[in-house]
Image 1 (tube, rainbow, N blue to C red):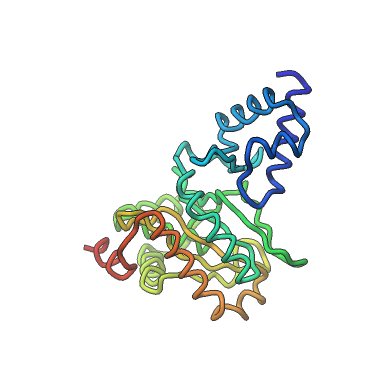
Image 2: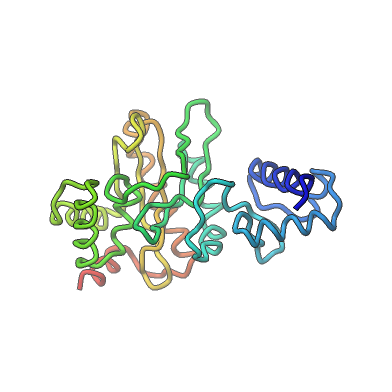
Length: 258
């Protein structure tokens, strides 16, 4: 690719990163004043590389920026399409940052979407860094997808790597409590001064496939837990039902425990 082509790709990515909604091909051409033929080629390159998704309605949505983690080869496009509007509404209602998190192949927590609130002081997580599940609220929720044996194996691996000092039973109880409550609250996160809350997103079979996370400055979040919790839970349920889930969290937890 020529230097000019690389420059145009960066122009497209930077412009799409500023847009709050998926964009049409014509909008890209008009906004950046690019030739139609080369713009189409640039968008195809970005889609093939996993940076952009072409939606069913023909519009284009930015999935990640250069340097952010890939989505582990999985098809998260459907999840992101169903979650986008609901996540944006949750951010507007709570005034805090919103994220969609998934569990990677290495059991790292990957954040595949983030939306920031329109306020001066806000939490902007570095999504290029994968967190360990037991460290963050989203991770505790995502560990709910593991069987008891898988959770014990996870504990053993994390202890051997020097990343977890607790017991199997302690983590299992934390995960079970979050499942029963329908959310997990971390008052002080990995990043000093930040806290977060997360609720599960289920697929049509009642399996936890992702976590909806609301995060912000620790004290501000702590003061607003009672206000944020219902928004968090209702938004996660809305996304789950949009994906075809028709159960309820209590029944799904009981079924996984048997």
